[in-house]
Length: 206
Image 1: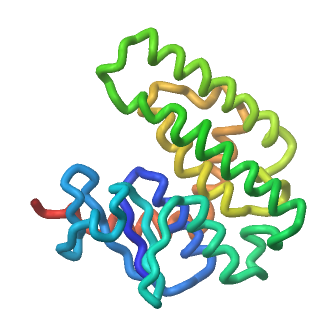
Image 2: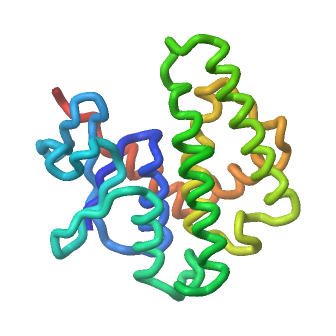
């Protein structure tokens, strides 16, 4: 398999899952501005949508969209517990969380990356995001992970996007469970290995 990634993006989540599973893969860096890749290619030929992550399977099929990639990977090794069994109520609960993270924590506040947004628009987006973070805080108040005692692909995804909060000038210590949660996941060997491997790949030359 081959994972296309860009630093400090949601592509970190499938990378963490690949490390959790111990699966072999190649890692290709994407320049989000030029869409050139570290192996000399044009990322738009891999994913015409233009954004990471993209996962090329051994047979040549290409998967895009983080939640789909995460579930595909988890299902390669059902015994890992990274996703509940397909068809179970717990699997639906996992999909609830993946959809919530996608729409409310990932896509919802993404306009905040645009520093030219009027201040009142930024304030409205941050207020909405704060309400969503309060939902996550309540879920994590008495459990180590979103689904309970076990780390799942939803945690890999949430960890990746919570990393953007300092960029948005949102201090997570307003929600006491969240900093503890982030550090708990950051300490996982899979996360440390994924971050280290991403640092090894030099920026794409123009």
